[in-house]
Length: 125
Image (cartoon, rainbow, N blue to C red; front, side):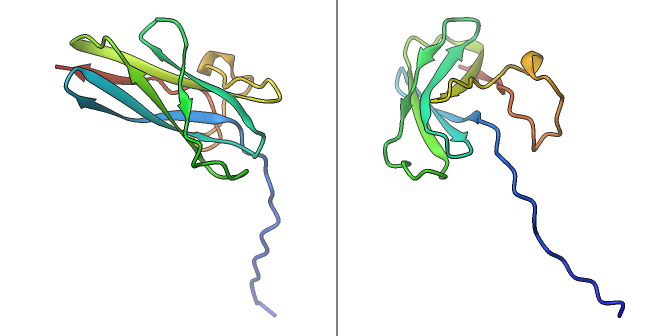
């Protein structure tokens, strides 16, 4: 009858991904805030790397404990020096899946689908 109807039927599985949201400074101390999005598989860990340094453990916020909610995390960045820095986060879930780098992605996805690590560049004055 020329009538158009829409029916939502797509159910997908979200790929594990984390992002650095912001960095704050109080005196000489810097705190990194980030978010993890996932499909409900429990999060085992989240790590942060500054420049090409080692991966360091970040702290998951226990107030974001609902199965399908975003998870927030923080990282105390001690010893930050003036200049340009790159900060990257990566999450790991309890099934052992580690958020990949862009080079490790098997198939390049659109921006909304890709879940690779997203380095953030910032300048400390």
